[in-house]
Image 1: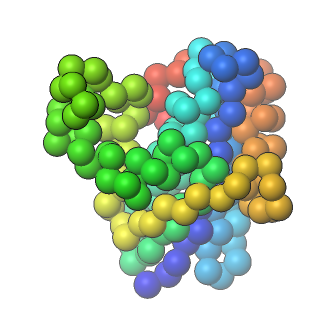
Image 2 (image 1 turned 90 degrees about the vertical axis):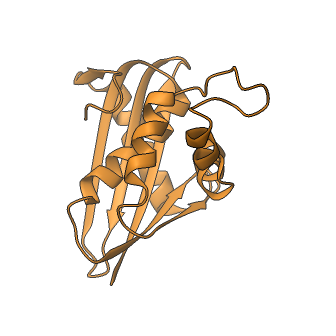
Length: 159
């Protein structure tokens, strides 16, 4: 089984405002793919989520792969590793605390919920703006996407 490393990052300037995502995918044979997109009217958390979703979408048709996702977003990584996402889905996308408050970015979380188990996937947190070259590259890609003149509406899952 081939191991694929995915680095994903999101940014927003200002927050909320124009957002961007950056992705670096590294295959065992050394191939590297990069992707970035910019969006009107978004938030940093939406871009962090959308970066991971886009990467998993790009890999969904591959066979016999194991994915490790690296993100500097505790919001994304903790939702998976601490099983919040599974609880939210079971609670009809509401917080268990009072059963009334809807999960923010529910549209994207639902999409990630469907994608995350297509391949064996682990999520690892990395410190942002530190010495991780691939995470820093994603940040550069996301920032460039924000400044591009090819922005999409932030409708999330239509990528």
